[in-house]
Image (cartoon, rainbow, N blue to C red; front, side, top):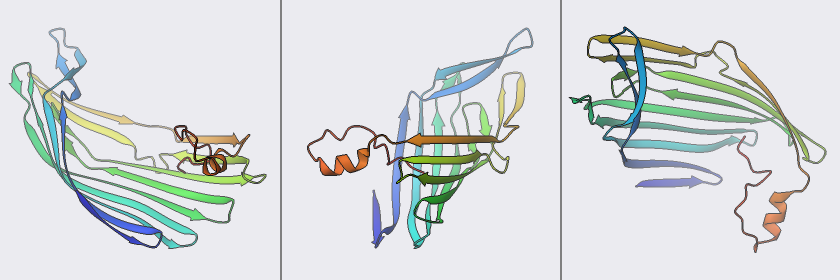
Length: 215
């Protein structure tokens, strides 16, 4: 349930939500008698998320577009693991932002940022994480050829850290991406499917628009 207000090509929205996941899939670990940690995946009972999300898509100028959202919610997970209750809850918040800078009709840059706040899990808790990307796109030959250069995890902060505890053990783990990931993508359009779809309203409209991918 939400409300949306438009300002020309821009908009702001506020939504209230309540989500329930049945048979939630989650990973867990056990310490065996041989001293080895064993990792498993199983279906637990449910989780619940109740909160608010604020979203904005704003054309600040003709060359600067900002799309951002902030979500705050009460999170609760329920169920049993090896006969023990895993019921626990936390107050979570996540945010993301995409900023597009248009240098010209054929050239643009996009900065992406994502933040996931700390949260409880089936056996413990997950720490917060920040992830950032940057991309530059240039189009040639009447937009038939496009080249995109992107760097993932620009600031090197994409760390996934968690703490788990159970019978006779308490463990800490941290996943960290060591190198940056640099991608160069080239795309050539044989036909302008976007224009064809506009001019042919009788088409099925079910395929992906070759020129409409999110950048």
